[in-house]
Length: 261
Ligand SMILES: Nc1ncnc2c1ncn2[C@@H]1O[C@H](COP(=O)(O)OP(=O)(O)OP(=O)(O)O)[C@@H](O)[C@H]1O
Image (cartoon, rainbow, N blue to C red):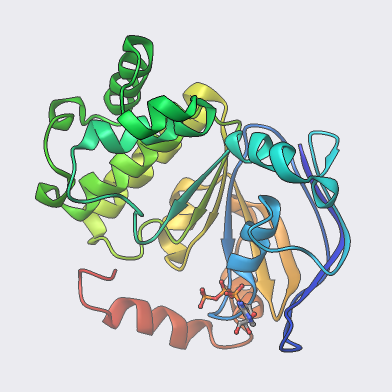
C-alpha cells in the first residue's frame, strides 16, 4: 500500500508541483494519472521512489516512511519499485539479455559487476522476464535493432526481473505509435493482473488510460481534482481535470503525428 498524507512538493525555484495531496494506492491496482502538461503527474510518480524529495507531508510505502530512508536502505527500497520511462533508458549497443541482466547488478559482488559474469539462475530469470513480455526470441539481438515498442518491452522485462511490487511508469507510450502503444499497454495489464504488481502510470493518452486503468487520478495545478474508478469518468470530469481545456487537449492529441500518438 502507498499512502500520500498531505504531501506538498515545492521545487527550489519556488514551483509548487504537488499541493497537499492525499492518496492511497492498494496493492495490485492499475492507476492512470492524467492532467495537463505541468500539472504535476511526473512529480507525483517520482516522489514515490524518492527521485524527488517531498517538501512536507508523508509518503508511506508498505509501512515505511519513504523520507526516512538513507543509503543502502533506499537502494533496497528502490529494488521493489520498477520504473519505466518514455525514453526506455536501455544500453542500445548491447543485447537485450544484457540489458535485462543489468537489473541484478546492484545485488552482485564487485567482481561480477566488473566482469559482467552472471550466474545461470540470473540468466534464466532474465529469459523468463523476456518471455513474460513476449520477446524471448529477441534475447540475443542488439537493442538498437529493435522497434520502439520492442525496446519498451525490454525495459519492462528488465523491471520484471527485479521482481517488483510496484511499477511506476512515466509516459511509457508517449513515443510509440497507437498500435504499438496498445501492445505495450496489454503487457502492463497482463503483468498487473497475473502478478498482482501495482501499476501507477502517468499518461497523456486519455482514451488509452480509460481503456486500461482501473482507476483514474486527475491532477490540476498540483491538486487531485478527481480520484475514482474509470467508469465514473465523464466528459464533465475531463473538462474539470483539464481546466476547461479538454476539447483543445483532445484535439491536440488527435492532431499529433502517429509516432507520438
Ligand atoms: N526539477 C524541477 N525544477 C523546477 N520545477 C520543476 C522541476 N520539475 C518539474 N517542475 C515544475 O513542476 C510542475 C509540475 O511538473 P511535472 O513534470 O510534475 O508535470 P507533468 O504533469 O508531469 O507535466 P508533463 O506532462 O509535461 O510531463 C511544472 O510547473 C514544472 O515546470
